[in-house]
Image 1: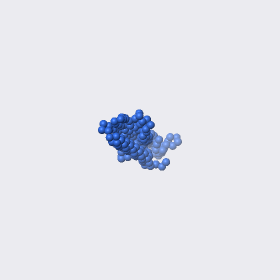
Image 2 (image 1 turned 45 degrees about the horizontal axis):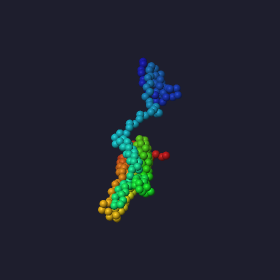
Image 3 (image 1 turned 180 degrees about the horizontal axis):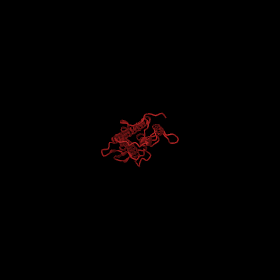
Image 4 (image 1 turned 90 degrees about the horizontal axis):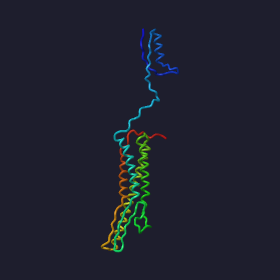
Length: 237
């Protein structure tokens, strides 16, 4: 009598013989029957490579792209703001006509007053730009890798501090412009020249700074408001 037995390996020894093989052979001898044993190896090695997880989709995946892009935009606008004017003026009187202003590095735009110098707002803007660029690079790792909450919290803290610094810098710029405008208006009123006056214009630097602030706030919202799912809990170092 011939029978076919299908079995699988569950514990292969040093010579490649599994427990199932020995059991089937023992059963064949005890029953005095002829068995044709067909072994099927359905085991999966523990070290076999696992299929890659699909890329993040939906809102989390979009935030993983949008947040770094927003930080990069904030950094670029902050850098552009350092090369622009803070304000310009044109003063006209009975015996004097002057045109000038100040840029973000504090340089006077009036060729008649080369020694004049204003606040160097550009230094703070460069600090903000560097922090924004660092966050853009760090967020790619935060969103793509399964890092701990400790890293995500500190990235959010750095973004909040950099954005706060930018707010303070722009507030200083706005107050400086208002102070200069008040001074030139007072000077124009003192001269009491009916044909004179002062025309003041806010420079492009402040508008670039406000654009940078808008991008930074948007990046913070994308980063903090709805954290991406799947981030692992804190792991000991």
